Length: 350
Image (cartoon, rainbow, N blue to C red; front, side):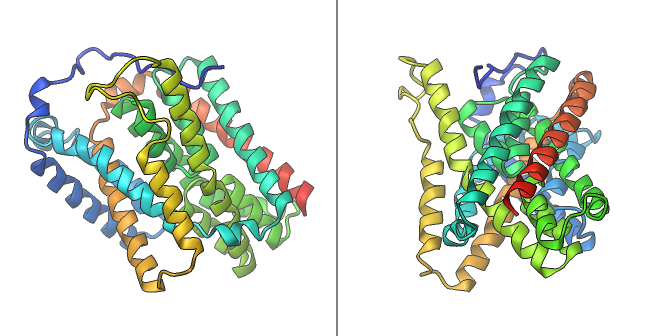
């Protein structure tokens, strides 16, 4: 089964050549402002993840009567740049939050369980998305978001798959919506499923998408559940690099002998993936002080929020509505797959 599907061309969304020479500063400034507003929303309503708020705000400004003219005109170049470049820098910094020594300390049985859950979720969601006939790279991106770490993983894979901005933004919106619903739904299932606090933490870490959503969900069962959930979640994040490398290899194979617009062949392993691995290796040395790690985490959140605001601004709701039902069905199916696979894995490893 091919991993990639070349994005479909959407009428009325032809690339504007003048965008290549337009100044990026208006769009970058708007993306930074959007990230700041998303941070304020998260501070006022902690249950709403900052990255989710950034996507929603980006979609909103793209459809407000006065702002949409700016978004589609002078700000478009900078917003697109934010969605690409700032996303890559944020993903590199994500590696600094990955404690490889702690992850491996969970044991090889847990490593095998998490790997199996990720594989089952990714392949199952990708297959279902193709069967439902979702356009472009939506099946690939949604499968990535559900299996690894939500919006960050979608952004990483989109960088090597060359996915359409609208596919990226709609996939992020769907994955973050389901991840947010998990905060309310999963705690209600702990007692009916007869899960101890430790088992509940592992289940949350293996099935909820975003790290912030994992924390918000697992903390309802206490500190033991929270610690276990975060470690299992970090193990899933560790699988981001090999997944992105696999997609990059698939892209390279499909474009064998074809050069990019800059005259170079696609790199076998993207530079930002190498940066992610280098950051994780640096974190494992324990040479960075806590203050530096805290600063890096803040910068990572800000960069990803600005990038996702830029991606959200590319969403065209009338087009999205035409596939909304199928995308929602895929989201529910993927949620069932990841929750079921991770529940079975937790029972087998505890």
